Length: 389
Image 1: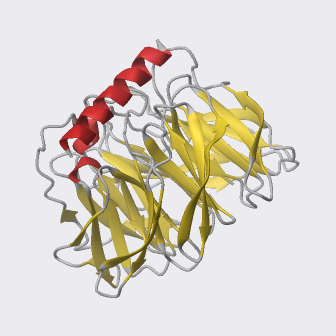
Image 2: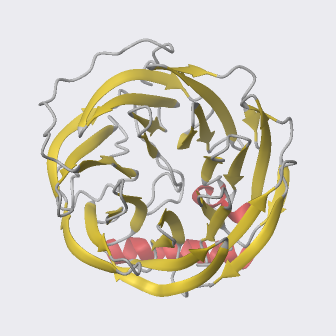
């Protein structure tokens, strides 16, 4: 089943590349919905890992303690109060996006999208223990990605041509940002919905712009921000066949990985224009759609090849470090790293497992284990969204 589903994903992506390539009620901002009790966090744990189930009936976040050796221990399940969703045509990645579960360590908050309810859940984080604080309207159709920079939060909605909306973090409360909603106006390009919908929203580290990747529309949309509010129209930059995953290095340069395995770096101007700096690849792997940057190495999960690739990143210059840095369980659909960058975790959308790897100084990966506890492995229901501390 697993390999057949991934093959279908790869076939759909290849076809696209040939062309290019009753709802849960939303609580008002500031209200605190009922939260399920949970055991006190384990103070011996070195960190935590969180996985979103994207369950169509009752979405939830599964929590794990991370031990000092990188191994995970299941600690609980936390309902979001909303429903998950699946984009038409999606196989191992139901939301076809990066950033559906986003950890804001600075404020101790975890953001989860509820695609089937058009809402975002905000959890307070204490170790691996979560307390549900708010359920906010996404102000669009089918939220798939959340980005946080400083006190600014943006959500990406995938349907109806796509849209973005902003929020402000004020103490323990997340507030909608007036005048921040923008429709992306993405038109039907005859690809399956999961390929023609936008993939990710990313707020620049300096909070001067918001960037959206559009997959088979082949563009990056950049909105300059004024006091957190986007410009009326974006600057459009052509970027490969299926631009998907967005990351920023310490200098604020944008790193984009295309589903073809091509990585490109850009410098963002004050006017929202992107200037290409470097390009590397393609790696030869299929469906490279999720990335994380760790100490000069950019890792990309390849859903169609059951592998992780790595790119060397130095002052905005890119190079392929390893086309296959590690093998994974079926259909890797998201990546996260521990706060100090010692461990990498990948979520298998097809198998419902989390694989753990130790990161060496040279960027190489050594697998140290995997877990499926609490994730419903083998139930043929893909999961998506992972975050770590």
